[in-house]
Image (cartoon, rainbow, N blue to C red; front, side):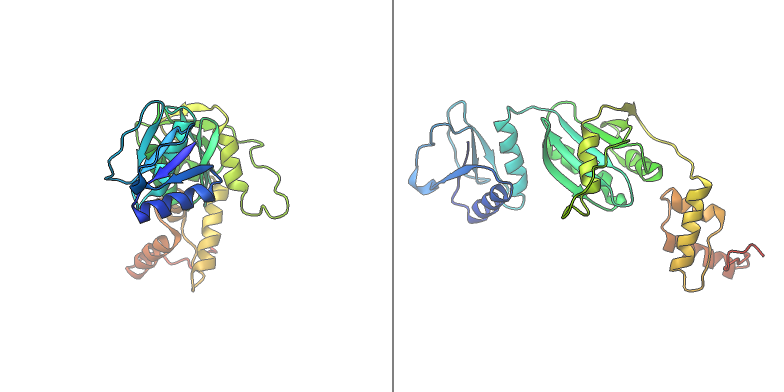
Length: 262
């Protein structure tokens, strides 16, 4: 059982709200009353500067009022025995699903822009602690997956997972959850360890970028192959590539804005 005992209102409100939102059973004690911990207490959450004295097997967690979630995550790890391995599953794409598992239980889930995915994973691993964490990345969406893998810290174990069949059927009311649920499934599958993933955009992927450039450009400008390739690799976004192309054509380059090659 988790017990919250603090006279810090911000800590109390933040931690209790987090516990309730996650459906965790807990009880609270009045810190000023010096009440005894109830039988069965396994984790005690207190404020950042409060004095605390507990006996085994009770362990305590100091909660930061600005980050109550971290304290709740820590307390839950203590209830599950602590020290368990953290596994992060990533379903790559333009908005990857990210699932954080601790001892097989999902403790956090995200759907974030691809450029933010590696930072989210790194932050989750730093907060989780525990031995030998691993990040498992699906092998679909090759270009986005490569960008995520290459942006992860060098000391993180990364596995490339065959993601065939990991996206579940979504019933009524589950729209938008597919990538996150796929990330959970990916986290459960052992993959091949990788340090990086070098990929070259296919002709089809480059055509997609060119089509996108015409759609967003007021002058129906199509990017040339070299700039479209850099967009596909994530080195530039479409707007930056279009700006570079405009600058090049304005300074004397060839402007093939209609994309017909003439």
